[in-house]
Image (cartoon, rainbow, N blue to C red; front, side, top):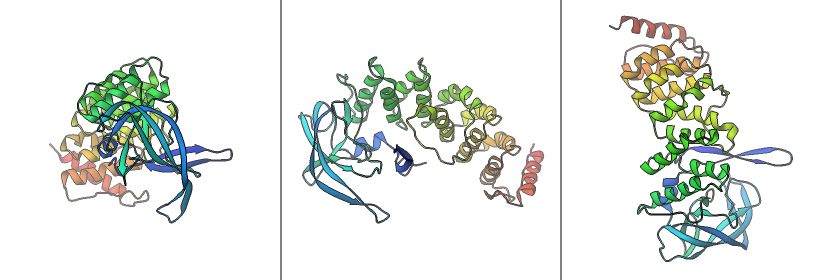
Length: 344
């Protein structure tokens, strides 16, 4: 799944209902690359500029206020080396559409860009991420400098778990040695919540050590299979569910021994995610696992196995479909079982 196109659901709870709003998945590498400068600092004030509105893709209009945040810069992580203060515009909506706010006096990493001679945040959804005052930065590469600043959050004993969870979430899909080191450290730590978040981040970059560490959680996971898409959530209650979804990101054939055991997991969604990963691999090395999947009690696992077999082997026969009432499933299953029986 492309991070640039993927969406997650942001949730806002009102006195009468909870509203789910789709927003783009955060990409640390993407926002660093697209920003003219990246700074560690604090927003010391915000001020109204004017009434404003934006038009959405569906033709509706959202109203709010154009505001400006004044950021006191502690360290520059990318560009603007002489910058000590920056005024950055942003849009504060009256209706929740997933845009991020600008909290005051909270150490953060900000991502502005220049437009028409003024600064605005690169992403209205993610104007900033968590930061730590006094972070020691020594790297030359902007993305690694940002990762060092996030590492300072994880090392700060005064920061609460939610701040550290935010730092780990920000590293999701960042396939850099420093990110892997920070995530592996959290994976080995004492806090279960942080372990699970770190495991998700590592699975997203195809880390087999993380898959092996996640196996005990996955074998016991019982996720609602009606949830068909992976979303990123900040709530600890969603951590195991996120871990299950992340299994489908694995691409290494070395995952086979763990996948064989996970294909016998009690959780239907776990087995579906393994089947999804096998289809992405499209490797003859996965044939023994696909044979196991043909006998699964879940129709989606069986259909995925048949589709993968037709793509991997190019054998003239049944590919199956994702129609639950496909009348051809039984003969297709038999075709592939006979195909395996004829193999040397």
